[in-house]
Image 1 (cartoon, rainbow, N blue to C red):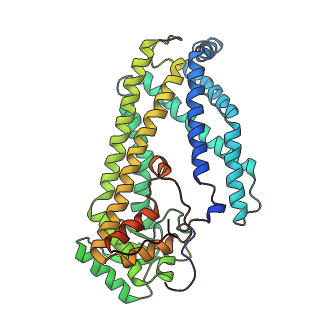
Image 2 (cartoon, one colour; image 1 turned 120 degrees about the vertical axis):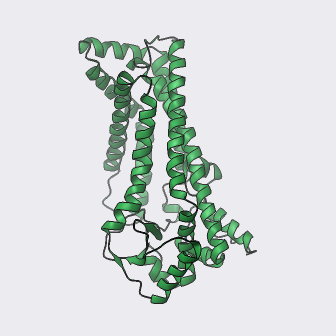
Image 3 (spheres, rainbow, N blue to C red; image 1 turned 90 degrees about the vertical axis):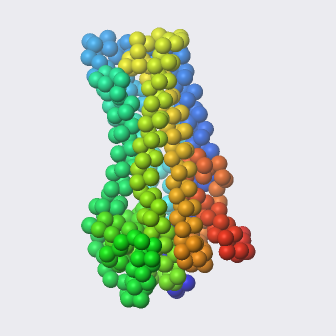
Length: 385
């Protein structure tokens, strides 16, 4: 490795004792979601949802657009109060981890208020827009919501990352002309047209989620400064080979299409399931899916369908990571990529496989290394994740 300094903080993982996102954190998330399901079921089956809906419509003289806002605001406020212990514990864990890393001024209650406030506002906006669409487009609403969700959650971030940011940040020449030539030759051998190779300017405020190597708009290949400064050329070539493999295998379009397909399937299931459940009308009859009193049923279906769709989508993303690793291994061998992964993740936090399946779009580094080591018959490294 070049020098003893580590790579950028966005690529490092903190030590396990300072990492708030461990298995206990994800178990807490599972328990919290199950509790939300139970609370929504009680809210509907007890008739409280119907009474709140009727009361809001009566007090606001039938102005549904205002009554719906009041109903959702009261519902989310009630959920926030009942879930306060979970949110406070999560904020406390994050605060302790940040303070252990030197951020002594971080306030637990500020973090708690920001997290709960932002989540509440997003949930309110989502369901209010959903009920507006249900009134205006009772048949097509789910297609509109699915398209908007895929655009906001996947397509816009992809466009920002690959088309906007590369045009904003400055790209400087690499300090070693030989490395630039090798990268250009590697791209040519793969069949990917790269017009320019460089390093993002070190004085720029690098985005936290930027990868070590990125191929962006205009067919430019940008390397993170820490990668160029701290890694051997073979490791840099291996990381570049991964990105070239992703372009060659069209991971971007596949990801965009998978996001659209998963969103359409999820909200289509919500549409059909909500109609069926509302028709049952037990024990608090609702006049239809558009009736705000059926919100708990709709919210339950959204939670379940979203969890299933996101699990499938994350599995696709993890498969793409493995495919890019395999492409790089075939192109330049495993040695450089193994070194690069160990350098990027020197202190990984082990997580159970169920956490990876349910919550993570990146596979375990340990499993990635095991696949590469098996391919080149390396002895396994028990210290890697």
